[in-house]
Length: 528
Image (cartoon, rainbow, N blue to C red; front, side):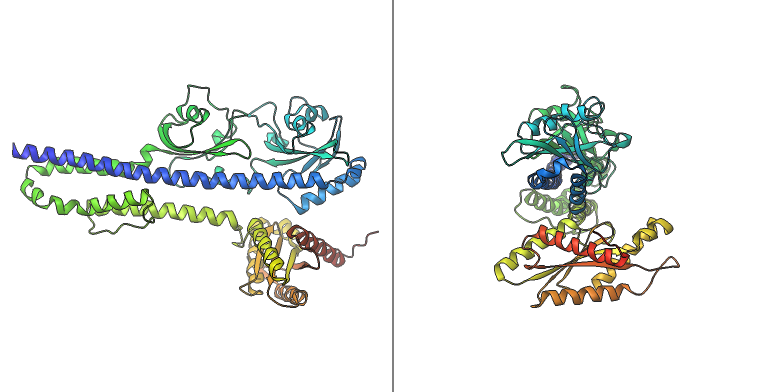
């Protein structure tokens, strides 16, 4: 009877303890899922907000006189695409009455987001109707098939539109920007497959009834399940937000975090199968039950004497995990008293914590750095440029901006392949960084274009010219890539605050123009 009572006590105690640990681990995983979903949703909202702000600004600045001059309008649209390449598939300007297309860049090849083809499709589209009726900014519908903004080969396009008004405030045209859903740097965080066997993200548009993007490529542009078919989508449609437990797309129970993306009316879902989240807890439960009942009869006295000491580290670890889940202390690895079953559980928790931290750091780095060269990307560079302008406005000091384009890079890609071109870009990044001070910023802002931000010297223009010369000298020697001798030159444009502008956009545009002027002089181009 004593053996039976002890074994029953061990079983009951272990059951309660495992449930307690499962609850704590579940709270931690749910908190991580919610944090991850908020981070990705904020990234999406920021990117869409940037595009909306840019489109509104361009619609307000579009010269009304250019609407009657197709060549001038096409040139204007092309220059805007070159300066602000946020819309991967360019712009289209439609007449205010919808009777025709005034200008488009790049050229045709994109069907209107409505049934039919040609100009009539634009006239009947939801984004055109909304913009023509005075909406400051509107986003077109996305459909899994049939009507929808599509590019060549069925590529799905997100369309944003803004009205163009004349001096009297009348809508004379609609300017639309087009971004491919699969465009690099747009929905990458959603469509990237996370570490692990299953789980990931779903980006849903309840208005359009479609899954816009997903970690599993098979779910992209699928229609939303009908009400009553899938519990997770039913909760989302009912307005549930935060962390929930429900049946997912594959029919299994999942831990999910539901976060809205208000600027566009979408909803982001970060989901993880419950079985995967609690796999280590299930293994511990099985081990404890089997081991306890097999050895309990033989070692009941020994276990009764050592039980409190044996489980003290696990209790301490559980208490620490609960405090972490409640936010009382920071997420830190738990101490391992000894490498037994309890130590293995704590080690597994520490491993999970390390993986979560690595994923967060990796995604934060990806959001602000170029994946090929490791340099700051355009978003991070523009942020530093805005900060430099704000500091200069307060202190009255100047700073310089160098806009760099590689000469002879396209032939390298054409003759030797993109692998050699990528290696050249990495070498250029290293060489440019070596020519600068640690306080200066060098970034890759797209393709074969780099930018440098200089702060500090009193004579900033002279310092910028000196740095430009040093960069050119650094790039003068040939490069050796896979046994091939390559030569790459630089075309550099310089803009200084405040002589060339006080706004970050104006400085970027001035440096870009100066760079193209330098490139044209090298190629012997004459205009006029």
